[in-house]
Amino acid sequence: MNTSQQNPLIPDILAILRRNLASLSAAPYGVHHLLTELSDHPVFESLDCAGELSLFKKNFLIMNGLHRLRRALWAEERLLLQIETLDVRLLVGGQSSMISDDLPTADPMAEYYLDWHHYHETTQEQVDALLDSFWNRFEKAKWQQDALQALGLGQGASMDEIKRRYQALARQHHPDRGGDPAHFIEIRQAYEALRC
Image: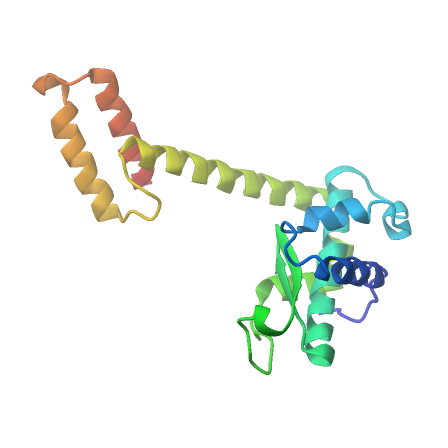
């Protein structure tokens, strides 16, 4: 893993985080906010790519900087940097529920963003595949939620609960028992979608 390259965004990211530390009651501050504030940074201006690959590299630089800062701030100042896509913040003193001597050792996200190989070697085709995968998962989650809703179930319903609910609704809405054929088909489609 290549982790030795320096990240020129770190001083600017740290300045933004420290500025936002003063406004602890402010709304969550996400990675997209950092991207907006750093949009004119010279390192972004020097990128030799465009489109989604450029966005990937900008995001990588920000996430690399955040994860490097997270390790350094914890080791040097015992400040915890919380890194979530929509909520990046420095936690001090009583704000941190993590009162231990070390950061978690197994953090696949950190390992990914701390390895410069991903920054230098990722191609436009790989970024396209990542985006396609993301949107496929997003769509799958959307239709799963729609199917659960059609059966009157909430997120996290087990397959046994889904099956029992489907059977009850099928008995209630079956056309042979005077039910609406269109509603019965909707129930069956929802069940079939969730069985996959």
